[in-house]
Length: 125
Length: 125
DNA sequence: TTGTTAATGATAACAATATATCAATAGCAA
DNA sequence: TTGCTATTGATATATTGTTATCATTAACAA
Image (cartoon, rainbow over all chains, first blue to last red; front, side):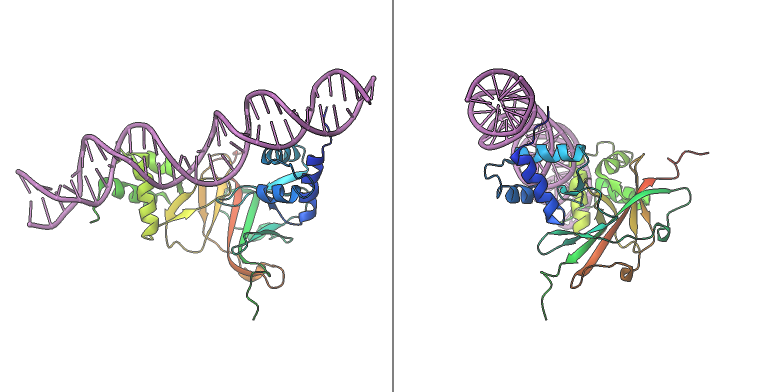
């Protein structure tokens, strides 16, 4: 039978409260605030379970390890700051009929990833 | 001093003629048609050199190894067929002013990746 | 044609995640 | 509170993709 543990609660709280996708190391570091003994093995195990249960979703960027965010957010895409490496949700979408593909190709979904600098990392004038 | 080898020519020919980004294994397999002894080590070495020289570009998709295509193609993005796993170039672009980011965020570049089925993999009615 | 040495081929080593193992710990039903 | 056992923490192992090693091969200047 499944048990509620402080570790699992801490990990889900961290992801819920982040407002942006977090890396496993960010989750580990933030989770240790609630459970100092938290292990990276528990982070990976819990993330796997939470994904399987549909509570969270992996956010995949090219060449990078998965990040995680709460599932069932609105249609959105992601912005990665090339200075601080944080990834932000952009709550917007592009119109599918603006996307042109060859005849007989069928679009199921799309990923739009923006790269640049977030407000914290843009030099103030 | 740099030498022209059959292996290097074969690899560049394969990439030039593909019309879509190729994985290292696709390049190895196609290159063996010209040079049967071709080794995966030579493929990686040559790809690294060709990228450094600006002849080809890595195409990065989330959670996948780099593919490679000829550099200096027009502005375009990529379509991955989830059935045959091939990646196709889509020679189109989206208008940057259609992308909305939070105040003070600066966009340097973006990647748009479409997922679906290519014409070979869509069931004919 | 020959000699020099860059490039190759085969494979070991590496790097970066992610998973498996297992004794110790701690949820939770009774 | 106790006992059962799911879960944890620490770490070994696996996986995947790429680079390093080194004896052999072959490009090309002379």
